[in-house]
Image (cartoon, rainbow, N blue to C red; front, side):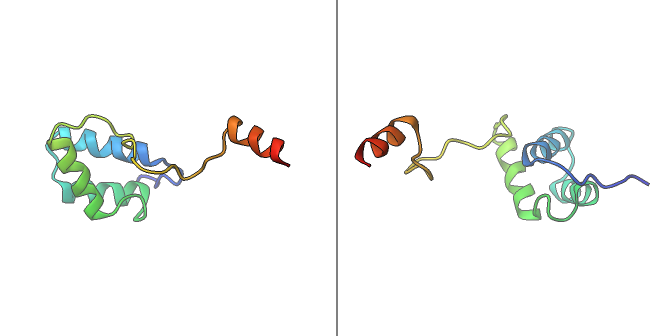
Length: 87
């Protein structure tokens, strides 16, 4: 019996989804295999279906797409210098 993988990254799990989907594995079976190998918290069933849809539409990247809008943080060298000057 295989030992579950305890340390994994979301990119690793997405790559497994892409691999299995490319081999014709159904999303429900992909989810079962991921849950068994990586644990239930690795990827939800709905997220597996979403990734399979994206890969079926031609997506090849397993990375996050760039997000629009405000950045979550604004710390950079320019801002740090400006704050230091103000203080």
